[in-house]
Image (tube, rainbow, N blue to C red; front, side, top):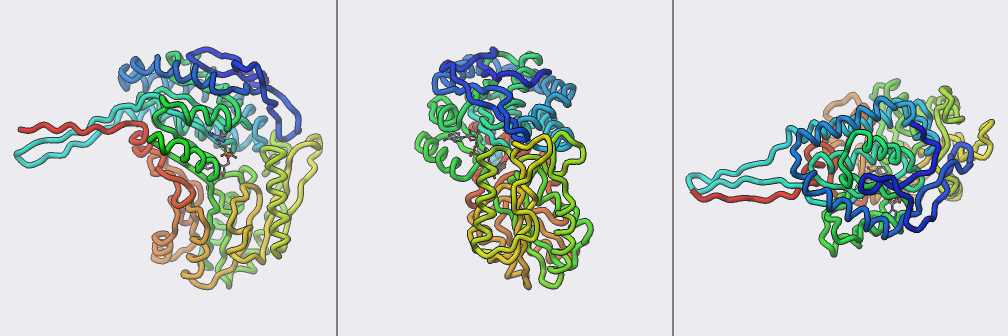
Length: 482
Ligand code: NAD
């Protein structure tokens, strides 16, 4: 599959230019160069996509789960067979190391499709028996046309995480990937054509969030919105969708605590903490950006952690030796560097990193050194605001109560990690954390059947497993009197 070409929308089975005829520059973050063009779509393209979805809905929603299973599995197969092209496209578009695209992003995308293709074969609804009087059974039918909007950090991974359950449960979809990383969603639309997905079942409209994205949210025929992205964008989407009584699933930002007790398995904790801090340049909603260390381990932890972080290689994302590639855009690089400046102003000491990096042959790319900061209060702006880059802070603590208060002090509640060999303490702390996902002695171990999502300003609703299939279906209770 070729990926270095201009992107087109995928509407009612056809690859189409935007009605405006306007395009957005698509940058390669490792070189700072424009390498393709993205449709600058608007409400007219969205209207065509919604009409296409509405035409396709009666047949798709009634074709039977076996047919949907077969087609979604075929799409998964095509992605898997073209893993290298998809991985190259993902790395070129996002700046992430190619090893990550090959081993995580693209495999997870075809797993998402296979997972929900098979899940729908097993999906069942409930019945409620009223003794000798009546029986209720619950029908679960697809909603109709639904909107799926995804961010740039895990492009195809999160795009498929939404559209797979939506399609498997019989909906037709109008989807928009991030305008910053649209290439693999475009390749996916070509894979859908090749797999024989009927026209209009999936429509991919590219463009800016405030234009194409907002038009999807505003359209009265789009009955549900599944969104992953920033908390402020989620708030805006909720403001538009709530008065129209649309079903909403919002997966938003995080500022996740990584809590390290002195009795942890030190080596396992250390190697995992390097990953949870800097994988994907720290641009993972689940990254553990606030590291809390029990006081009598603090110095030992800090010295070893900083030593290992200094050994990480920031480099060309296509090199196998690279640990951290480029951050996703020039604007994002400035945002992260400004956050590091704020940490300095707030009195933080930069133990390593703190600056942009010039990478040979990628001099115009957007690279940042992995950065470790200490000496900041848990309540300062640096420790309360999502940075979403290769930046972590270290904070010592003495008691469980103290660390729980720190961990729960932000507006977010997405994920948390606990490191201890004490099983009672691990469960006590897990129980009291304000987080939708808690990992004990691990990070990012994912079972696709589990509920995925955040508390507080990290979102509403849950994705994954039955939760996603329930979100994308409308329950109807039928009561039969004896
Ligand atoms: P973003 O909110 O800027 O954009 C996300 C998507 O929304 C993009 O496709 C964008 O074009 C679109 N959009 C923007 N404005 C819109 C509007 N008014 N109406 C409709 N759509 C609109 O987020 P981002 O910068 O792409 O991603 C980073 C954020 O995503 C971080 O905050 C991160 O924590 C969060 N995130 C959360 C999860 C999770 O599962 N909770 C996963 C990944 C990323």
